[in-house]
Image 1 (cartoon, rainbow, N blue to C red):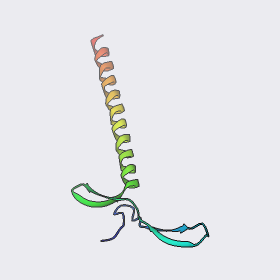
Image 2: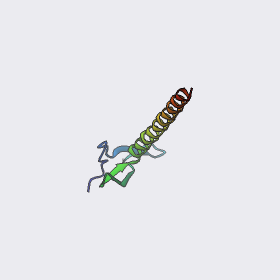
Image 3: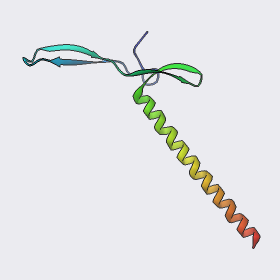
Image 4: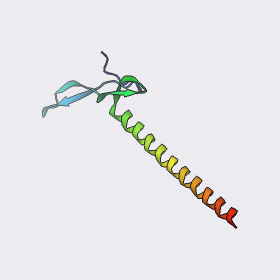
Length: 84
């Protein structure tokens, strides 16, 4: 079982703990992996990828709302022109 994001392939990094006397002790910094079901597949995804996916989902929703409002305005304008 690898500790790797299935989307971006990011893995753990190396870090160092330093004591007061500057002695270096290497440590492993794992990434924050979460199990998430995407399109019916259970994937291990890092939280930074989850944030990016949520950001683009929000933008898609905002764009769809703007398009829907523009279409409704165009229909209203066409109906008003037809009524004259």
